[in-house]
Amino acid sequence: MDVVVGLDSGTTATKAVTAGDDARVRDSVSVGYALQVPRPGHAELDAGRLCTAAVEALAGATRAATERGDRVVAVCLSAAMHGLVAMADDGSPQGPLLTWADQRAADRAAALVADGRAGPLHDRTGTPVHPMSPLTKLAAATDEDATRVSGTPRWGGVKELVAAALCGGPHVVDRSCASATGMYDLRGQRWDEEALAIAGVRRDQLAEVLPTTAVLPGLRPEVAGQVGLPADLPVVIGAADGVLANLGIGAVRREVAAVSIGTSGAMRVVVPEPMIDPGRRLFCYALTDEAWVVGGAVNNGGSVVRWAARTMAAGFDAEGPQGEDADALDARLVEEAAAVPAGSDGLLCLPYLLGERAPWWRAGLRGAYLGLRRYHHRPHLVRAAIEGVCQQLALVRDAFAGTGLPVREVRATGGAVAAPLWTRTLASALDLPVRLADSPEGTGLGACLLGLHALGALPDLDAATTLVDIAEPVRPDPDDANLYRRLRPLVEQSTQALADVFTALDAAVPVARVPEGLT
Figure 1 (cartoon, rainbow, N blue to C red):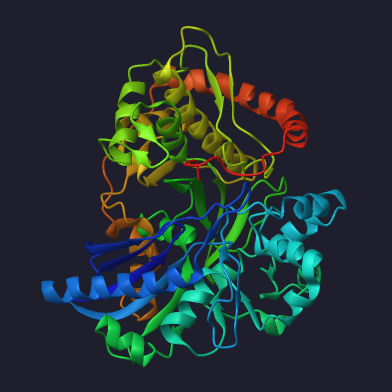
Figure 2: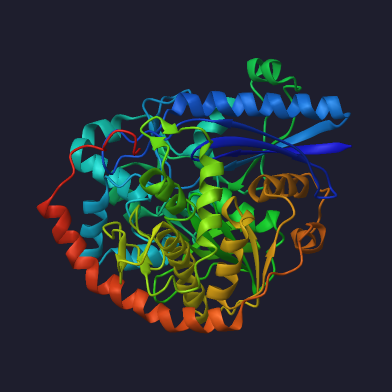
């Protein structure tokens, strides 16, 4: 069978997924790497390791395809959004890559909000002004050392870095990843002049923006030799990971939302043209010229359970879990929490361990438990944290409704939703049926499908709706859904009431370093 490799470079791993025009995942290869958190607010990747991981994953997928008797006819690139890395003229990295989770630009983002420029920037670029974005990261770097920023030959993110490592050639990025930088005018389809001035960079330092279906010249000869593919193999520039997740689970029609819950989470819907939320709670990023993705990402997903394992589970120390792996420990805690009734016996969790994005877009939010009583134990705390994440996604759904985008069906993917408690809680919090993708590789499969589309083998992306295998829906429990609906205003009220308290607490007790083992 002819297959495309969807190469997805993410925050903690690069995955290479192979699939043909039947949209069935044939193989999946993952190469992991560590997210580096040397200080509070820092979240970096070794940019060189990101490049070598892409080569290793592609080589592994090629071997698996060859052993199966498949023929790789193209590679399509997917990349995590909002990264920033300094690059030399030849595309090699000149330092670490700052990920979406890096918070060093928080003060710069707050200043743009305070002086009134954040709103118009959001309206033009589709990206909320937040420390996640390359706009604010560059602006903060310019404030610190304008000469260094202006003197760096290239600035880019994950996609620019990986494309250069695999293919060489000119400095390029796809429209999807560009639309997530906070510096790209969606309707004008060009780098935004005001954003460039704020960032302190010139247009020639940023990549040429290509359609997501553009085909690059091919692989570097040395890379082709390493991975076992011809140097002239078509390499499709591809798109950002979030929008490809919609495609990979067939959520490409109006009123069908994609929800992903991995380390973080998101809810997204596809619309035919750029659309901006008047309340500025949602983002808008490109998939293709005819498909744009509106949605909201939450910083905290399955990470809340991993935090609980580190904090509350016996047998977990600074070196990691002892006697069982981290995933098994997470699963055990979730199973314990399933015995607790909905509402966690009156315990409410604000799960903002990593600050928060949608719908608040406030990096300074912090986690909190409200209503804690003596009879609450570890299962209550874990269940309340899961409920808190699902309530955040329900607030994103409410923002859709306020923007005139009703959601009738949810298709979900990600490691967390493999646990029945997560899926049941999500369905009840959203009060919507939730259907799970048969394959967990939504983003990688989406890259394969976009690659097939670029080659002409999949003329209509809407075909993904019926091509992708989806399980029968998990339906909301009416009593639980009613309870979560009544509790949601308390989540909003407590978040707003505590926001200033969190700011004052940070000022009163600054954390100079990350305690050992909690990175």
